[in-house]
Length: 89
Image (cartoon, rainbow, N blue to C red):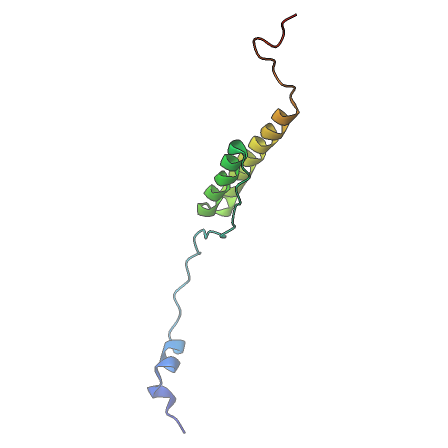
């Protein structure tokens, strides 16, 4: 038989454990593929800011990105502005 008192694993288990501190934010490592549209890519890159924030800080980043992407989509629906020489008669 083995002597459990001489086994360091048994002694470590018998000591009270220190309370664990909450883990900090950890990046998810989500890959963001460039779209080729500079404005959209800039908004998507902003999502990386959420990687370094606690969960309660994510909402502000997500709302900012969502607002920017909606503006980019709305701009696609806007009629083109005529240039200075396109309205000649």
